[in-house]
Image (tube, helix red, strand yellow):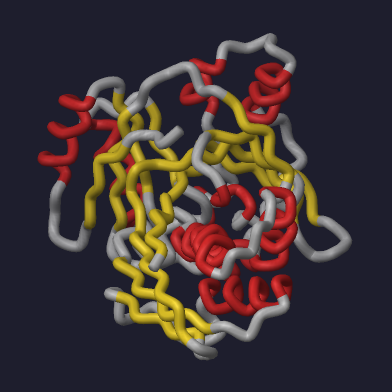
Length: 283
């Protein structure tokens, strides 16, 4: 038996740079793992790949990235072994927190151990890239500047301690829908892109990241789901130093300097139809 934690992530900014010839977008984002996680327990089976999840809306067939990851590991290792996976789901589905991708990465790590695969990080990275654009990021915890379609990672040290209040409005936003409907011209000047470029050249202080956050999906998502704007305004009114959508949503997070301030804001913002988490980065 093998147990893995699959950590959620936040996008500390997300810019769409240009559409690629393969249909994907080149992006720029700072992604950070946080201490909200799913717990996955893996038990050996003879041949079947079985999933039992605490969230009833999570598929257990080939649509689940856990199944895809297990199938790819079987093919790569040349084995015909099965696995039973129990998933204690804490990361909201469709919340822009990468729960499905993180579960897939946890599956690669776990099966490499359970099936004595002996694969190194580069080999796992190659398999992860076949599953989804952001799956490679979840192979390890930390903070990274992410580019390409999500597979180019530059791990960094973010020199600031922050506390996040995450508000999930209890409905998902489809990543596919968001990318399909993103028709805004993205060729203008971007303070976020300029900041990241300067930061990589050590011309900017990383502690200023939160002042420069931009997410190209915020306008689209707020138009279709006005509650997102309401949540953003609520977080700002309770003292968040920055507020942003994570990924394509639907989760909105506020950045706070102290745990006490984050706890107070979370208590004041609890309402029906909202799920709230207080999180910290995981390095």
